[in-house]
Amino acid sequence: MPMDKLLECITIFGVSNEEFLSDNYQNYGEEKKLVTKFRKLSKESQDLIFNLMDSMK
Image: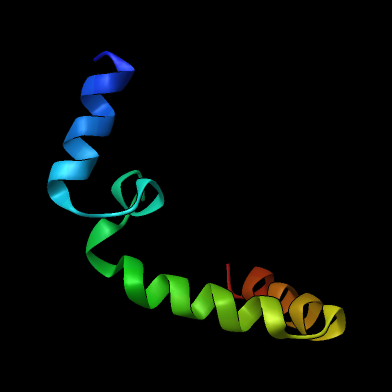
């Protein structure tokens, strides 16, 4: 699909490029809130969360 047609489709849907290309577009708003809050955490807290997630695999 040509880029101009893709951009036209995104505009028609009325969403951001990031939201349109998201893997889980139905929950994009909630995921974005979570990522925003996560980025505000200290590096140590982020590392702890990643370690916890790794241990749950």
